[in-house]
Amino acid sequence: MLYEFKDIKKDIKIEADLCVVGSGAAGAIIAKEIAETGRRVVLLEVGSYFKPPYYGHNVQEGLEKLYFQRGFRSMLGKSSIVTMQGRAVGGTTVVNSAISFRLPEWIRTRWISEFGLKFSNTALDDAFSRLEKNLNIRPTQPDVLGQNNLLFKRGCDQLGIHSSPIYRNERNCKACGVCLTGCPEGAKLSMDLTYVPWGLKAGMDLYTNCQAEKIILEKGEARGIRGHFLEPDTDQPGHAIEVKAKLTMISAGVMASPIILLKSGVPNRSKMIGRNLLNHPGTGMLGLFKEVVNAWEGANQGYESSQWVRDGIVLETAWGPPSIASIRLPGFGDKSLAIMKKIKHIGSFGAMIRATTTGRVISTPGSYNPIIYYPLNQHDVGLLQRALKYTAEVNFAAGAEAIYPMVHGLPEVITDARQVKLFEEVKLKSTSVNLIGNHPMGTCRMGEDPGSSVVNSNCESHEVKNLFVCDASIFPTAPGVNPQLTIFAFADMTSQYLKKRL
Ligand SMILES: Cc1cc2nc3c(=O)[nH]c(=O)nc-3n(C[C@H](O)[C@H](O)[C@H](O)COP(=O)(O)OP(=O)(O)OC[C@H]3O[C@@H](n4cnc5c(N)ncnc54)[C@H](O)[C@@H]3O)c2cc1C
Ligand code: SF4
Image (cartoon, rainbow, N blue to C red):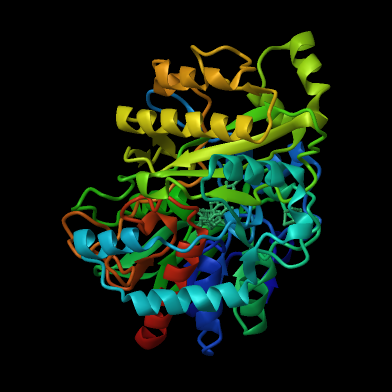
């Protein structure tokens, strides 16, 4: 059953076999898998249940309604890096670009050898296969590529480097390019349109606008969750909820999961709760082409180059609505307007890196929004410098007449491909470039050593029996590719374990 804010008329107390907090990439899968075994599952989600067309073409409202802190969360440190998290049934899968990469072999090997993770490659591959089938994960189809993606392919072909259509979870994509504010066509197979309704069909109870606040801890064991319903427009707390459960699963995402653990007083002997914050900082570069690009026609992220993935660099096309793209253009007023008038001819390619920087999520009194500390280290700045140079090269090889680097110390516009060498010569600092980090991970690290991790290979807390954490926060290191399919797979594998435990 679905219970929304309007349905809750009094404080409630319920019992369940499993209480899951968060209906995003991990939580939705776990709740559905266990509900299908006939166990009583309660899923709590702080966001609302939006349905297509969501806010698709209305960027401002989309940011306001579908994201934590209106999409303007920042990681602070040496510079400020925007990091966005979805706040809705389906979590960040509602607003993401549907890119679905398998975890690279060498990262799996590292997780097993260095962190002692106990999962078999066969189990992981089986999980990937199940999810790829269930979510129709396939290469971006030729009819929805659009010119921006094709230009990127052309540039890579000219340079003789690898490129490929991106695998995405979608069916009947209409190439409208507004994935970041929810798919108006209902084509993106996000959790709210797949695993959540499948779980509801199997009998799970979903409570929306319901903020999980404290894990109930008794005699060193987790016994469920306490929280409050929040009025959808104002976030004012309403009635209280208490879920007593045999097992408690926290899947509230990288920022909220450690905060809930810390505020609940979960013992933190490893001191790793909220630490080990990882990311894939990235940036975009706009190029001006003679031909019409109309970059908003086509999958917003439809082509990639994994040429340097082992080095920690992935290039991907990346289009945002013009109001967001304009942030990546130089100048104000008339100058900015003059460039915006050429928007039909502007393409957008991006790059992200497998950063080695680790940061921290800090809990503050009276709020579930974290302070986020992420001081980008010089190794990662060097990697970004290479990534920027490659992005510029692909632009020019694709036929760009000009690029707008938006890097402090470089010209506002570069019109000669030979000047790409400037990207090597500039003394890049973390503050020199406008970065975004939408793949936060790692704040409840998984590992077999209780002294350096928060949960074991089954996602169970080292400190508190019957308490589990499964979401992007369990990653020991950054995978270097978009993380959602790996999160799905760990949620799927954890569900197989929970089926035996319950
Ligand atoms: C704009 C954008 C584009 C992206 N594109 C891609 C992409 O194309 N491919 C890819 O692989 N990755 C992408 N990502 C990242 C990816 O979507 C996330 O890594 C992934 O969804 C994280 O999964 P999760 O389960 O950890 O958290 P989420 O999916 O964020 O789910 C957490 C859920 O918990 C809920 N919650 C939080 N606190 C509470 C609380 N106290 N009580 C109850 N509920 C709570 C949240 O509302 C949310 O629904 C993108 C991210 C962004 C922001
Ligand atoms: S590009 Fe495709 S998946 Fe993205 S919002 Fe448009 S129709 Fe949906």
